Image (cartoon, rainbow, N blue to C red; front, side, top):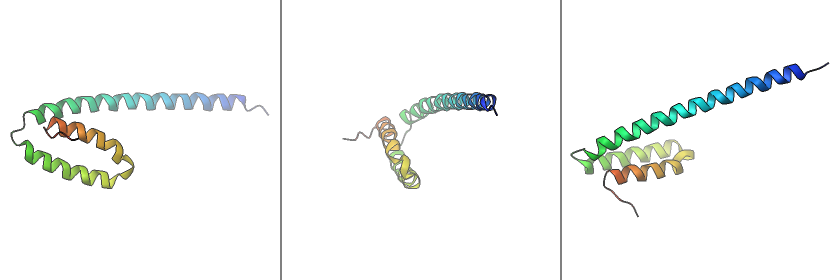
Length: 90
């Protein structure tokens, strides 16, 4: 019995699935970039940055506790946002 056509079909389907995942990833990256630009514009013009920083830090604490596997990645992004809000970390 020759399974080559079935194997080739599976490989084609897997390649299509991988390409679809790549397309989704690029779409998500584009959305994140737009959201970051929007957030930066809002943060730079917010009248009460100190209160905003406090609230943001509380939410980030909860987010990192809820997803400990992503906490390290979140910390770098968090530092960037805090910097935009005028809180520079050493």
